[in-house]
Image (cartoon, rainbow, N blue to C red; front, side):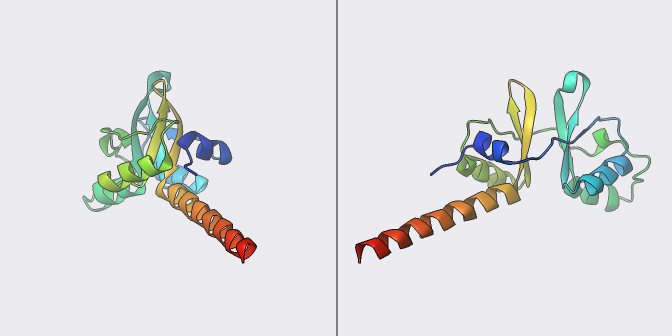
Length: 146
């Protein structure tokens, strides 16, 4: 039972939250807090994906460098060298991408446009769910054959 990115995205109610590169960091952080997310996609003109900004970017590139949240733009701290997922990829493949690149959020892109975002928590919850299902099936098998 291998779940695809598309299957997981279809089961989530999550909206994609975006900011522009010109957004001030303080406004992006307020949006993350308001929406209860750890990262926002950064989109430019025509909604093209330009990057991602996360709480990690904020702590490492603003707080630790004594920069001003109210004067720094998202474009100055965002990650622009993005790793992305395709909707048809398996979550196992995404987990490998995330772990090898030490990232917690993975934009999902189809035809050059962002269609969703996966968090490491989404992937872990799905793995746990699949394992629980497997255990349940094995328990039924054992019970039925004895």
